[in-house]
Structure formats: structure tokens, C-alpha cells
Length: 68
Image 1: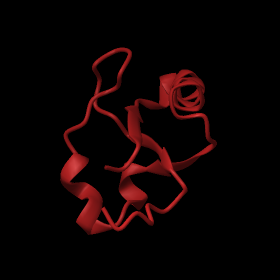
Image 2 (image 1 turned 90 degrees about the vertical axis):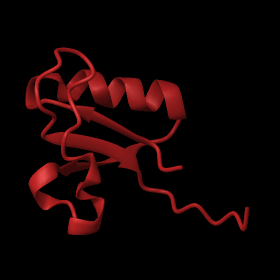
Image 3 (image 1 turned 180 degrees about the vertical axis):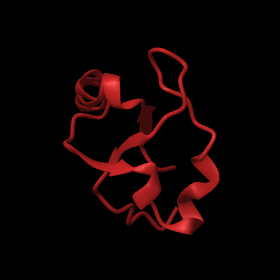
Image 4 (image 1 turned 30 degrees about the vertical axis):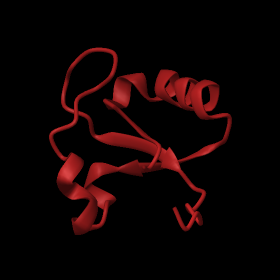
């Protein structure tokens, strides 16, 4: 499962802090409009803080190499 949090532009700083606190790693920051089409299933995500439509996603920059 990929580590990803969503935010509106106004709450980007808080979501970055949350990501580092929760996952203990620095994230990549990606605007929804810049995400590859295959990742757009999260297009309806809302901001963790205010409920507005998310336009920014912070996600793990590490690849999952487990053979699970």
C-alpha cells in the first residue's frame, strides 16, 4: 500500500508535517494535475483538514520492494 496524504493548497505545510510524523520519511509533493493517469483514481480525495477538494498529494518517494 502506497503512503499518500491529500491536501488543498492552503494546508500543504500541515500535511507535510503530518506525513513526516506518521511515516518518518520525507515525501514527494505532487499536484493532482501532474499525476500520471493511472494514479488518478484518487482524484476525488479531499483535504484532511478542511474537506475541500485536494489538489496536492504528498506520497512516499521510496519504492516498495517487498515480494509479499
